[in-house]
Length: 138
Image (cartoon, rainbow, N blue to C red; front, side, top):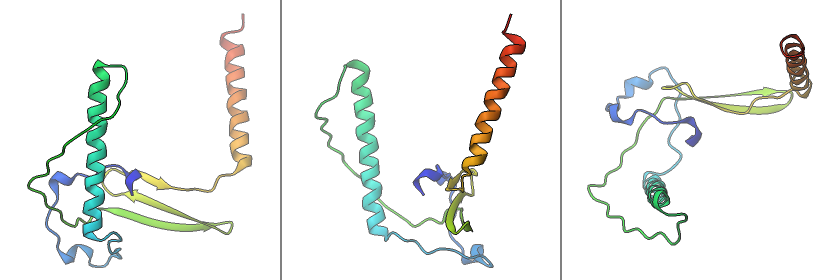
């Protein structure tokens, strides 16, 4: 899920059960309190990275970063995000694909054919050689 990219969280709307009418959906897998703790860890790591980047603009290295984070007006809520999931089998192996419904980012594995990859590399080398001999060989 993390590699699917961002979602437009500024323009979320209140949930209505009618949105899911006729569709299969998945119940959240991370309990809300656990997700909240994980989100705070992500934010703390992001803040630490920002502090380190700021220090590295002025100095050559960063050592022993110390931060005091004050959290205020904290709240959390469940969100339904447009993520489409599918899986398929090919040659006895199962592949899962996730699609971000907002920006179209596709994440997952796909079957790779060693023969096709090798042929594509050979074809690219042949094209490069032909172009070289046509335009750069004097």
